[in-house]
Image (cartoon, rainbow over all chains, first blue to last red; front, top):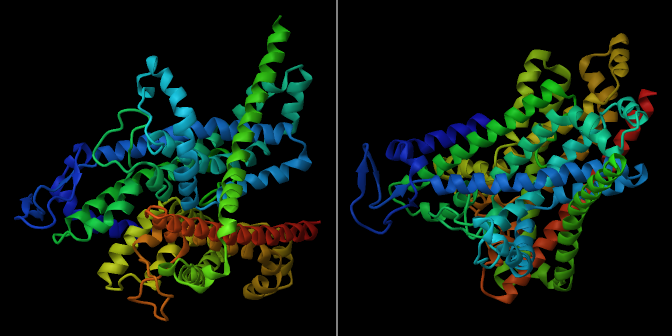
Length: 308
Length: 282
């Protein structure tokens, strides 16, 4: 099945790969060209509509930026929250609180998108971003104007909420494998709970947490609908600050396939296939490395899919 | 002095952790309660009576149900079969290689699966936007989950039972049917039900395989686009009318309720399975 998906994309992408070559990764303009007339341009023996240009650099940058910010936000929240859950919350309440993790994992991405678009984005733009923008004196990326709440930071925050359950679920299962005797020994030496976590618990689960982060990252990289709804869908610009509209590979594929279909040379569809291929390669790599780390070091099976 | 610092850092660290826990719990409640509160007044029997062109959801709800049914027909047998094979029959070497496939496939972005479905099924095979293309794309996304949960459920069956069956000279198929499957069944069903829940909430793989239609799903596998709930959420919220926005909200609420109900059913079944295996391993 994986081979079918990858093979289909590769075959579909071949004309675009021949047409743009390495410009695909460096070019800043992703445009299907004039779809309504004009003589097609021929480049490296492949025809594309006039003025077509398939430079995916802004998409790739947008994908990496949103997902990395999401991960940076989600990782401490997930690990800290689950530490509190497993180490400090009474066992009777743990099951109930864990339900919220599953609830969060179960919410479909369009609903996250809806929430980001209607609730979180406007809220942040009205009350939080103006305060953040004041820090712009110190950090240039935080300078306003803050916009309407659709953009890089909002998309990243929605993504962060989406990947928290994956990272948290894996970390929770890992924390339960930490030997009690080690923790008790550390406590008996007079350590505070924080020191036990620092000296015993975290080193024990470190590799697993890295793997969990990779899984969460892969999910953030590939997420489509939520980003499509809250990112502002800016094509062909690099985000100039944290509030700037942006887009990702996945969101672009979803948004532009309609337009690509009207391209008689078929090059638009092919260029999107190449973008999909790049995305597939990145996510497979992160996923595979994460799973290898876990298989090597810890016995906890990683969840498949969204972290149920 | 040093002790004070250590106490303070302990307190600070756990406060931050508690904050993290709050940041996990609050959005979950916020999203679900917020959506249901804004959508509950909109939920109305008329939504069931009209199609999306007339501000109802009939075609979308039926479409989602038909898609789920299709996934059940394709992904459940394939996934369960593969899971049984991986857990019981595959040699150790083969299994560890093959096992990676569903895991890695589960990490493929859903839009990539949808896109491949479009290029291969919709265009190359000339199926058009169709039920079959949509069901296959969804199944590709869901099957790994079914494989994994089947495998895990079978693995939880105590080895003693397998040894006992073998000692009695039972044939492999009988062992599977009479000894291994009964205790694993709730776990397997849980996997299938949760997979259905996930497919109910998916949008990206369907955008370019199912298309969309304001009409009810046609009794045909090919060439007829299918409407579904999540599409209404995504599209109608961008349309410039308050009624469309309300429809999007209502569709989101229906999706969420169906999905959460499925997950809950799955969990209850899973808990039964855990209790069963616990009893048998004593």
